[in-house]
Length: 207
Image (cartoon, rainbow, N blue to C red; front, side, top):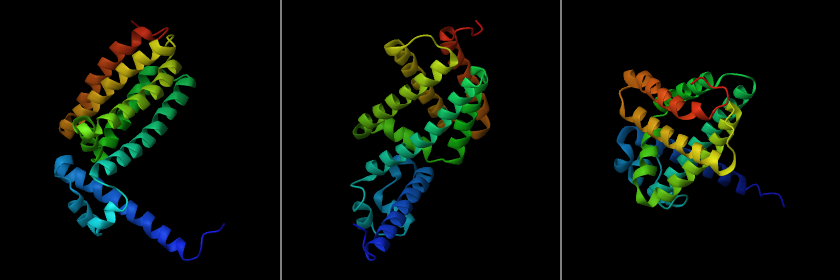
């Protein structure tokens, strides 16, 4: 059954409204942080009524959850690229450096990422969502680690990957807190930590 001519504009307007809500939430998070970002402020920034937001999202946590999905989708692309580069023969050190550089630059350009991460970590009502995000990246990083030559498999590989995700979680928190001019040093310090952790598991990696 084809949609009626009347339904199409409504669908288009709904999509535009959702996009306005997302962009407004990102802007408010970057300006005010999670605690001070309210549905009222989001509505004002989006140029729509608060009641319009509630048609799509019951509260700001639901919007945060959507922003987490946006971040996941972008990082999935980045991790897939890393895996492809590793399988082409690029050394793990170079692949990790490029990934970390893109991550920190992305966080600088998209300044809603850091307060979104903080919300996932600090809001008790988002705790399960935070665990879902960590588990997702553990699955993705396990594929990356395997491409580097980590010989462990199954549960052993997942344990290694989950710990690596926690290191990256800390890396992002450190980037979010540090002045921009200190970001390269933060990246350098965390790359040292990452290599100290993963290199012993990689066949043929330097000691």
